[in-house]
Amino acid sequence: MSNFDKYKRLGEPEKYEKAQNWQAAIGLQEVDGLKPSDYLIKTAFSNIEGEITIEEVKARLDSYYKEKATDTDSARIQEADKVSARIAEILGEKTFSFSPAEYIGIHKRLFEGLYKFAGIIRDYNITKDEWVLCGDTVYYATAIHLRETLEYDFRQEKLFSYKGLSTKQIIEHIARFVSGIWQLHVFGEGNTRTTAVFLIKYLRSLGFKDVDNSMFAQNSFYFRNALVRANYEDLTRGVIKTNEHLIRFLENLLVGGKNVLKNRVLQIGWVDNDTVKHPKDTVNDTVNDTVLSIIKSNVTITASEIAEQLNIGIATVKRKIKALKDKGLIQRVGSDKTGHWKVTDAKIVAGMKKLEGMLDE
Image 1 (cartoon, rainbow, N blue to C red):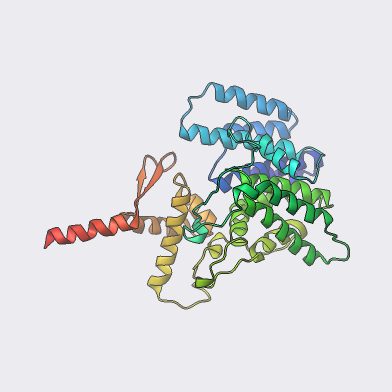
Image 2 (tube, rainbow, N blue to C red; image 1 turned 135 degrees about the horizontal axis):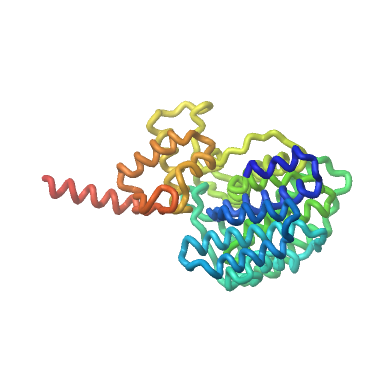
């Protein structure tokens, strides 16, 4: 991803803008555990250099994937590649309409041919296990009221006046709006990527034309987790909804803030060993649980990707993975690069150990 940064140094505005769009488009695939192919990266550079148009990029991808066998892994890579190209195309267009139709239309354009429900409001209720919530779910909007609720949120935002607000107040309001429409989870899948693309376009329409979209490339997983924390509450555990993490992201995005964005601090129950004194075993258990939660949410993730998400050393992650393997909670199937994780329920592991103990007696 850092290769795209060279266009900023070269000082060619048109190429830099394209590079930023591609950087954001590719980085946003991380929110669903997807990683574009090397072929897509090479094709993106050809587009940035002006050698091919975005339409030619999409045509090449269609041709490329017609010749490839379809299995689960290739389908995920195909989604990452095609959606990346479509995001880059949308971000490159100087058009926008602040409306529910635009929001729904973005989803359709991103996922047409990939999801059967592209651009279709879901008619069923959903839950999603989140590693940042230790396996719990956000309460998403009820299906039967989705369209009305979406239209209401847009209507209220359209009526809102930013006149006289400080930059801090503007950012706080934008955080409330974007977390609100994301919480609806209008579609079965692809909500975060759709919301991010819509947000970038909306921010540009508000005058934030020099937004550093590389923030979405470098911190897309943080962006999603911040949205989760903005919409989750459990008063029995002292957890309240908070936009503070999303505000930090937006401050960095819009006004060049220098907030440190670490995914690990967003997880419920995370212990910061530098500021909170806890027994060492408790801290280790917390980190182990965090790594296990990440693996559960993305069984194809690698150790290096976990280290990047948590902003900790690869050696630390490998130690945590070994500890989880030793406990029988995870198993690696296939190679480190192309394989996947098999996760065993902790209750099953505990039951097996109890049975083994009984047999030994």
